[in-house]
Amino acid sequence: MANLELYELEGCPYCAKVTKKLDELGLDYESHMVPRSHGERTEVKEVSGQTGVPVLIDEDNGVDGMPESDDIVEYLEETYGQ
Image 1 (cartoon, rainbow, N blue to C red):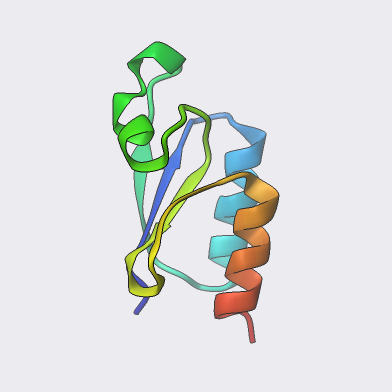
Image 2 (image 1 turned 180 degrees about the vertical axis):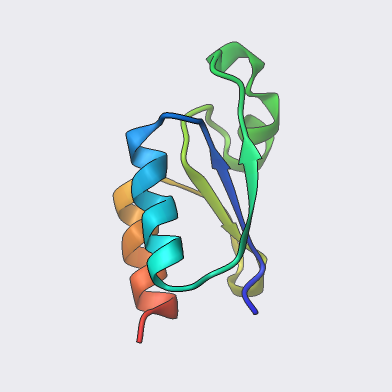
């Protein structure tokens, strides 16, 4: 099973795009909800170098802070798609 983590914000359409793809592919992941204020997003900044979400971590494949929903969806399709 994949070892995935997703940093996301409730109500974020970009995050929803990624969670939809994770669900479509039947992938389990650990969700980390970040604060609405960018100034309080220290945890996501530590892993990705920026405060935007979504951010994906896939330890099994050496991905330690991939930003940008389109890039994440493409990565998930290429890595875990049938």
